[in-house]
Each structure stands twice: as structure tokens, then as C-alpha cells.
Image (tube, rainbow, N blue to C red; front, side):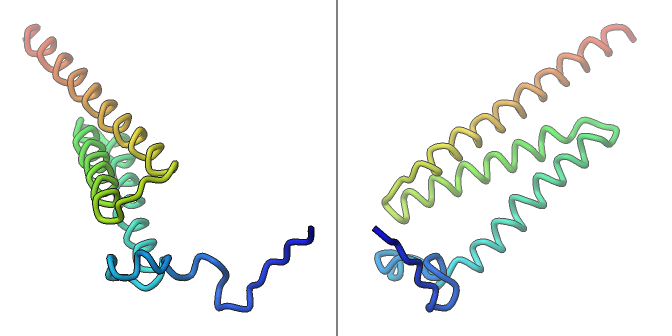
Amino acid sequence: MDRHYDDSTSGGNFVEYPDKWASILPFDNWVIPGVLAIIIFGFGNILAAIFTFKKGHSSWAVSAIMGGIFFVSLICQVIILGETYLATVQFLILSIIQSSLSGYAFFGYRKSLNTTEAWR
């Protein structure tokens, strides 16, 4: 069986949303949501990484916010589209891990702060 990929359309298979989503979403293709995802999640997590290397302990807050935004956006996706994909479940797990690690860092920082104040 010879499978031929037809890219005579402009850009291949993933240029437009499935017809089922057309009436639900305000976008025609993947470009705008992709750019928004890169801006929000990419730069947000880069910001969290930068705060990690600076003095002060606010990196856990930025990371928790990014994990929360990621979790909420995935839940909204499932509600709006009415479908769950394998990647959605994996991303939900990763957002929970990110939020949990942020909570762990916060409580570690808080414990360290209380110990330091006790010695003053």
C-alpha cells in the first residue's frame, strides 16, 4: 500500500481546524492560538526561570501562576470542545506537577524564613 501525502493544499493537514470546531472557536487556523500559547506559556515560564536565578524567592509565585493558567486553559479546552486527547491528559498532569513543585518551593521558603527569624 503506497500512502501518498498530498500537500497541494496550502500548508498540509494542520492548517485549519476540524469542521466540527469551526462553529465553536473564533479562530480559522492554528496560527493565532499557537502564537498566544508561545507568548503566554513560553515567556511566562522563561520569566519564572529568570526569577529563579535572581535573589529573592518569588520564582515559586510566577511558576504557580503559570501552572494555574495552564491548568485552567486545559480545563476550558475540554469544556469548550467537549473532547479530551492524550496530550490533554499529559498536559494536565504536567500542570499539576508544576503547581505542586511551586507549592513545595513556597513551603520550603516559608520554613526557611521562619527558621532564620527564630535565630535573630
